[in-house]
Amino acid sequence: MCGFVGLIGVDQASGAAAMALQALQHRGQDACGIGTVHQGRVHIYKELGMVSQVFAGGALSSLPGTAAIGHVRYPTVGAGVRDDTQPFHTRRPGVLMAHNGNVTNVPQLEAWLQRRGIRVQSQCDVEPIMLVFAEGLRGNKVEHVIDAVRDVFDQVRGAYTCAAVVEIEGEDALVAFRDPYGVRPGVYGRSAGGAWCVASESVALDALGFESGGEIPPGSVMILRPNQPARIESIRRAESRRCIFERIYFARPDSRMEDGRVFQVRWDLGARLGEEWRKRGLQADVVVPVPDTSRPAAQAMAETLGLPFREGFIKNRYSGRTFIMPDAIARQNALRLKLNPIPEIMEGKRVILVDDSVVRGTTVRRLAELVRAVKPKEVHLAIFSPPVRNPCFYGIDMPSKDELVAARVPEADWARTFGVDSVTFLSVEGLRETTRTPSCMACFDGVYPIPVSPEEAAAIVADRRGGGV
Image (cartoon, rainbow, N blue to C red; front, top):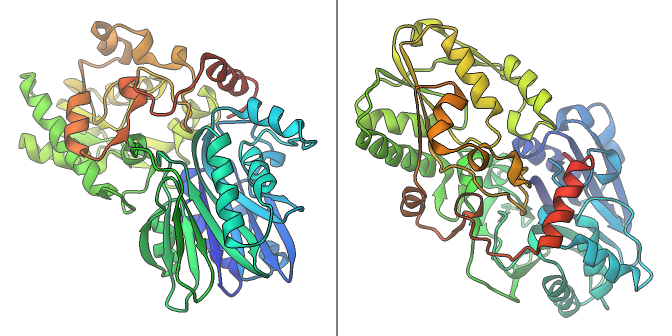
């Protein structure tokens, strides 16, 4: 899971890319990079750290040009090292590329490329995508780009949305394509001056003042040139299976996706959770969100139950997202800095704590300890997603079933394990009926839209345990 932006026809494109990446910083905190194309030359600057750190000082001045690709990284393949930071560049043919997602058949792609005398240098899975694309790019016309993307769809399995700058018929063009199932998000937009932008979320377009054109169509390629209409070619369309975890956790609430504003989706999930909680016959005095993702759902749940909604934690705004921290110790330490409870809100009361998901269980146990310390009467945990019982191979950091607490611990023991009086997860049926848009819910229901062989799954888990984040 990462965030990307691509721009064409923008003065000082690197500065615009940096601004867009700051709007996407929630999608990756480990590293970031920007590449530009200027007078036929590619310039890249990338480093470990957040956007405001990496591009402080004069870094952007070394990146001239009106076309740019930018990226923020949350690595689920490879290690958290600079060499795996995006974007990537190949010289022959010239391709500058970044992506968001997870490729599931990297070893097979590396073997295929090696037979052609091409060696992958990093552990980042955008590099094999780029090299397969470059190998299929046999000319500089639009038709050649379409053929190269078709080769990617033939060879590359997994979830991926890609942005690239290539030369087409003597001028730079922005190219974007998205896997046939559309698992990972991607949007595009245009400025009043005729420039184009593609990005992981619509908030990047908002930050730059671009008017949204909608989503990058799954199974399609978009070719974008300044002051020209978009060229969109459908290549291979499957039944869309957009990642539901984007709506639950990753995306910013003010982003718009195919099924509307993320805030509204979370609100609707919270209202459904309230209905399911009520059916259990439980009682409570106050609804408290775990900041920030769960706030819309907690407000909706409170309205549904006729209970007061109260902010029971003060969040340190300078603390990162704990789910995308590199390991359990880092997540636990970050939580101590991230949240501080307000005793007056919860002391002596029956509290419903609303959170977005439970994956490993370590964060929610620590939360329960924080709340217990202020002496509530009862603590009830309400989660506006179902139990995560299955690993994700498409870009979320939960590749191994033995890491998932809901898969290891019997349901009857969940409350004791988490240190609360009751646990209520949204049902899979409730999630499916509330969202309505066909989605990938494999982490909840075990239905994988893109098959992953046992060998591929083992390779992904081995890579993750070998140092990837």
